[in-house]
Image (cartoon, each protein chain N blue to C red):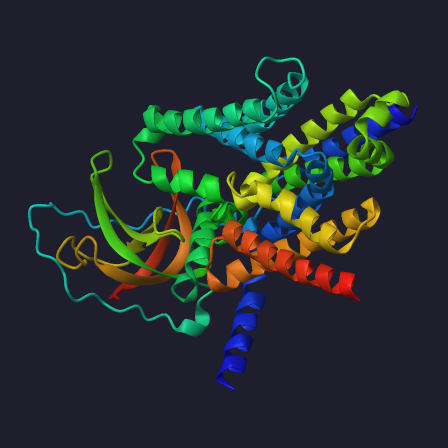
Length: 291
Length: 178
């Protein structure tokens, strides 16, 4: 009886919090980022590009520290182009460069992370801050960033998400071809390099957006968990994409609401909900196979 | 043709969003209170370091409080305070109750003491301070708590201009030791 009263009190509190503008903004942006990341997450997982997201998120962290040192009014103005350029470089030089594949991703990833933290420590504008560790912690784990978005950030996120979703719908068939059999796609006249480039640029955009939601260290979770969970139950590309999108949106919305209700860090809570969802889908997949 | 259509569609989407993002809705409360003058500050020399243990309790009832930071969890407190400081116009005229460490600082530029409630954030690593003004005649440090004391302050959120800069503050009629 007491437990029911506690739960109803929690929901009453949630209802009160949902009247706040910044909570609504967090939910809108969170859901859009989750949707975008899940759509391209399937492609990335199938192409064995899961770690590109991780590497680019560290690049975004490095760019964000430079933007902070430069005292830019909106960090995204620098973070976004730098991350896009690195995504293009990673993909373009991937086949011809002396340092190939996962080695170049790992190098850029740790390099950007290390340089970013170094800049934050030595730059006069940031090193004098007493809460430097807190700033870094917030950027890496996204403890509360999503709940402190300004209107401009929200509109930018909405605009970029719309572009990502429109591009995905328009290029769906070509992305499908490039994802499953790149050699066949090339043989049939499809410009696979161009579509890989489009994927890299879009992933960079998603990474930058997702930094606000879960922080740069946890971004890969948004890309990997929805796709892998959907693959436990469904087999066709279309059904995996749809299931992944629904899974990601539901987990993110639930994660934000749990975080708001119980005061837990937003990014970690979303990842925890994703893990629970993955376990549930794995169990569902096993049951489905046996039936 | 299809590619041109896609590019146009993307451009229109981005332009729509940028144009919307640039707009800022005027808030009637902002213009009304932006010129509010900060009430006369009690400025005293720091050599009389007699801390005040008894502070006058606030008489604002809990029903009339619009933003009660004392009843929120740490994530919400941090987010709410952050939004209060980044979009203060939305909070002007609202009654706020906050709990945190009392802190007083002296600014030579104006020759005044300024009083803050420092509120720890969700990860307990970053603190945000909200300035408050205790209405009436009060002497620092005689009538105020010691720096670092946990206090609860209830008052009305507002802004004042000083040296060409707009500051946010909470106007209160009392401080309660937590």
